[in-house]
Length: 497
Image (cartoon, rainbow, N blue to C red; front, side, top):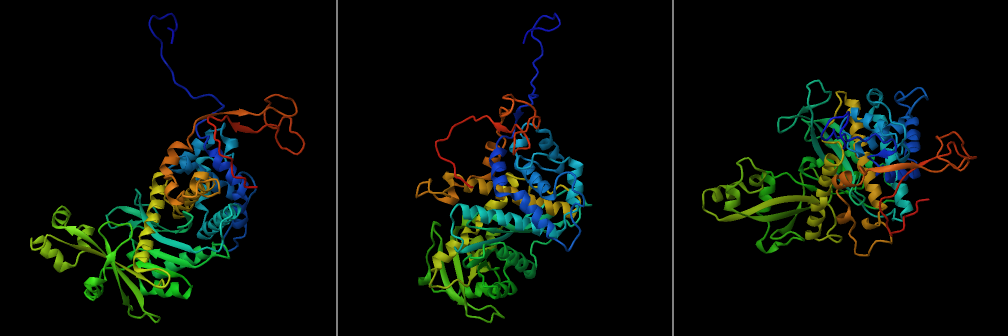
């Protein structure tokens, strides 16, 4: 830059982004068009209006509707929002307003006040609207509504700060935290329902788990197939298994390593072990198992063992999880140097008929439960579940719900992408789950795409006049904004209309 004010030498270089046609979040044009096409805002408003057990979120029609507020908060999280104050970032992006599903974002104080009013009944209404959009998208993509469904049930902790936060508790690690429970639809990669508990509730009651599963079942298409529930040992209980059987759901649950399980292990013959699927060195075996109080046919107890060397055990902490997977007497022999290696064991209890899945297939199917861990990882790294920002429990419940909505939006965008195997354009050998991009990659690469937003020419005056000054017949505005394309794609789009 040339010298200023007659001074010799270079002047100051100032970097600014004050161009009113520049937006840093042009990637929201994709999700915005999809959500407008699916009418998510209208569906959320309709479901919220049907809630009559509690007071309405808003009494007046002025400003954003409750549905628009929920979607706007989810869009804020899509671009990296970590607290309600980040709504001001969305609000200040006037150039990208027409690209978003909700053009007018509320201020941060308004967002907080509205979030305080959302009761659990309102959260359930938002979940119903999400499910209706997802089911409609599946219908337009030509997916079979009667296919089998797998529910993954799990929880993750979100560390918070401030002793005055409502509903928090100390987790096992000693941190003040919330526990976010969720049920996901494994085949779709979408969250269906959620529950927010204190961090000290690492194991919730079976009745609470069954309530979440019942809500998730009601959100499925009416023609859905057989439901199978997968969960870790934190959900293993006789009450949960009896409840699943009563509701017509099958289950595969990781069993707690108790003295009973170690005793059942000794009943397995050495020639009963067979190689596991896609897990090097692992072997599986099966024996019948009838838990105390179980009133139906014997269940299948499937045991997986993985070889562990003495050197690997010596490198672990005395409190490590790996040591808890080894029978106590064998662990002591390895630590004393009497054995060079041993096996680490995991137990799975299932009621899937042997005629439908073999031992190794059930174990492999249950192992895919780790997909929900990926969904939580996506929600924490790509969205804002790593922190629940408010001191009010109702606001944090809504924050969790919007975080899962943002996760579902990215899954929907991925579903309409040919590379995700959701349409006939993709190659036949395209694996849907493997090509589903990590949400962190999409968060950093797609949504925050800088771009210049230019107004279209007015059909009335043939100029870029202000919006609404010459509205043509049938339109409320004579100009709509679109992002200037920065790349081309030879793949034809999927038409949703």
